[in-house]
Image (cartoon, rainbow, N blue to C red; front, side):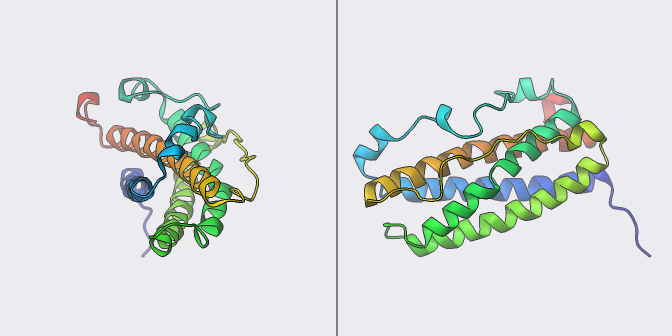
Length: 192
């Protein structure tokens, strides 16, 4: 007998996937930082330059708690969708990244792509249970091209920048899904 999976269980699974995605992006950022040239920190673009920066999102938990469930789902899905192409670029660039841990980085990027795809599929199912406003996706196209640069320093800087943007956005996705999970479990807001 086939039974429908309750929304709170789907949110729990989605939250686990988003947590893993954020953990991987954080680990990768730290790995890159350990071998990042000092000049790279100076010339790396700021977070406001990320391709997803135009999306208006809550800046902290208190603001996220004020946003409707359907809007939080829409924001999470929009951010996740915006990383589809950049993750492909990170993956193709990681295979030739001038870094001592290149193969580890490549494998983790591959794992992130799998978690991202699985999470996207899960959020598609969840949003269909939440109504049309949860299914809305704001288009945030990546316009950074298909090449991270010609020289080693430029490649590392652009790779690190893109990864830092992914880390920031994966944290937002994870936070939004945790708020949704808390609401589905009917927890008090201060417990989220």
